[in-house]
Structures are given as structure tokens and as C-alpha cells.
Length: 131
Image 1 (cartoon, rainbow, N blue to C red):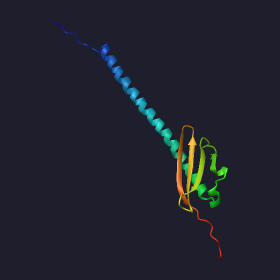
Image 2 (image 1 turned 120 degrees about the horizontal axis):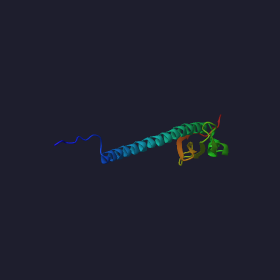
Image 3 (image 1 turned 135 degrees about the horizontal axis):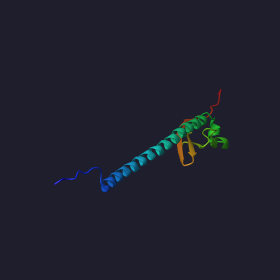
């Protein structure tokens, strides 16, 4: 009796193989999309941190009188191109129980996110000269 030699795959084997490939491809695409979203968030976070540090540096240069009451032009604004998608709000307040230490904060916002940076800053009162 002759046995018949099988060549190739059955329809069931081919369908199972395609199912495995499809599931693996979907998982790989999901992982790649997640990586792209994370990279997008990191890009915004890095830019917002740098822009916030820049605004804090500007606040540190202000005289004490302006830190006590920030003018509107220093309290909020937008950045020029190419970072014009970001805007900022700044604030300053004396630290409770301290006369010369200010809490400075800047919130950087963009569509879909925000990042805040803050620091404390020493700004002593002007002392009278030649007592």
C-alpha cells in the first residue's frame, strides 16, 4: 500500500499562523505607538522646563518691590516663535514667617499639558545708608 506524502499546510494550519502573526503585529504596533506618545510628552516636558527656568531667571532679577506685586506684563505671557505654542503664568509671594524670602513659580502650559517650576529666592529689603 502506498502512503501519500503531504506537501504544504492545511487550511487550519495557515489560519492559525495568520492569527499568530496578526496578534504579534498588533502588539508591536501598540508598543510603537506608546513609544511615540512618550517621546511627544518628553519633548514638551523638556521644552517647558527650559522655558520655565528662563522665566524664573527673569523673576530673580526683579527688584523686591516688583516681586511683592508682579505687573501684568511679568505675570503672564506667551513665548515668541518657534515656541509660540507655549504660554506662561508667573507668581511670587513672601514665604510665611520670612521677611526676605519669596516663593517664585512659573506654570508653562500648552494644548494638552502643563508643567510648573518653582524656587525660593532671597530678596532683602534695602537698608538705610549712613546711619
